[in-house]
Image (cartoon, rainbow, N blue to C red; front, side, top):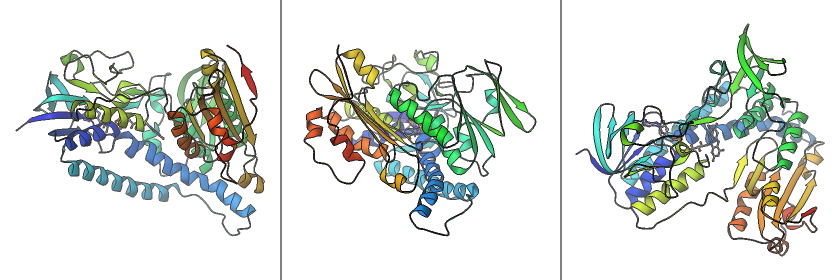
Length: 451
Ligand code: FAD
């Protein structure tokens, strides 16, 4: 029988979460995937990237270890050996995802799914029916920000490199661009990071943006910023990026990290009356319903907050609402996020300018040399900021750049979700000696902005 309660298109973070949750409520679920099971995060995103970040981080750790008294740790990095271990780990995780789907009682089918009529999905020529359809097809690298960008690698190919290029140009100023620039420099490549703005990470708190730019330059990365980018072209065995001021940046390899586009082409959306935004995104309401009755969409394909935990939360909210009898909505306002650069960033809530735009704001800051790096003679600095509502003392934003920032901010996200005030931070006893304790020890505001 080709009839289901739910057909999910895409077995990535969102699709797998929704399918498992719906099957747990007793729904008959079919999940269709045209590539590897696990999606972007597991196969070519968060997981392999973080494994690459760990690999790159050992260069600085080895230097620090020497300063702490260790000898005989000098070595050469073998990207090929890392790639083989990474492949084994990703294969293991893909198997685990297949196991999770099977254990939940959902059916998995390999193939390209497209909508052919309301309630009907075709998978490589075979039709399947369902009362509800969930589109969770994710996003893919955009390749048209400037002419010639199709010559460059994307993060997909970069994560499969087996040899490190001597020099690499990373095009883009978002979190994926800065993360790979930082990782490649850690591994020993000469890195140039090119983007149009003055600082990377548009939308993040300005104090994090300038500090990250400074820290990357201090590590030897070259920033080619503040000038519009025009075209990429081949030059001999390498590449040249042409900029609007007539300057050129050359490198042996190029990574295109200019952004991602929702995967909606070839999905048959026009057959069911779903229109997309110019970038391909599917518009949905607060319960992830599309314009078409019986069809929902979650995750990167909706271009809301393109992060794995958000895709999973949207997916579970859909399944709880539609199959579990528990109407649930995702609050997209307070999403904690990290940037896995060296130094790393953790951030949640409003930036300082965002808070000031809404009313009186108190800003608390702390900046110091972290103990481990300072002992080892490093130049690293940690910077922390609390953005507080000047009217009711509520903490609106927590921002940090420095070692362990993502881990620290994840924990503080609980406090923000609970509506903690600065007074709550003050009456919380410190864990000493840690970096995180500085968030409890900020006494007077650095700046007070009246409404
Ligand atoms: P995906 O996980 O992309 O899954 C979509 C699936 O649908 C894919 O497997 C695709 O093959 C399949 N598909 C598409 N079309 C069809 C079709 N017609 N038929 C059948 N199957 C189809 N997020 C974080 O939270 N933290 C991070 O550190 C982080 N790092 C990242 C690093 C990189 C390099 C990248 C690229 C992304 C990163 N992300 C990170 C973002 C995160 O990976 C995505 O937000 C998340 O994977 C979105 O989940 P999704 O379910 O919407 O889509």
